Length: 113
Image 1 (cartoon, rainbow, N blue to C red):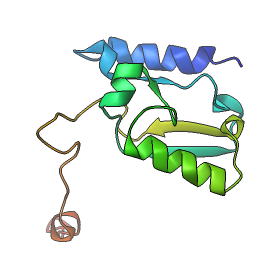
Image 2 (image 1 turned 45 degrees about the horizontal axis):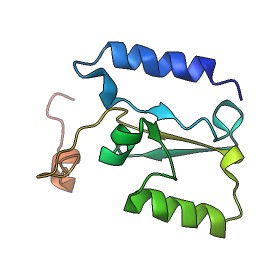
Image 3 (image 1 turned 135 degrees about the vertical axis):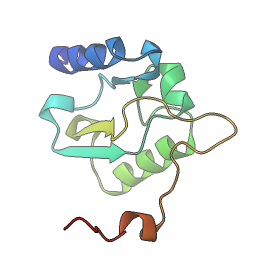
């Protein structure tokens, strides 16, 4: 599978980051550029950083749930690409990855209209 462009994209992201390894690669065993389905997750977890790839083979609850969902849906790895809306690691052991916004924050009226 030719993942050259995807790898170059990740390398560009890594070059722009203070900690380059906090952006994991696409999993080479997935469909990636030829995928039928793009699975967009929140942000990579510590397992993705440790393994260096966003993968359903990582040892975490998200990967296990996704693997089971794909199995039950009869979707093969060759049909998917997995990426994160925030492509770098933003978590730590003592806090969640992203802070939740309240509906009132997201739906605040604009006064300049």
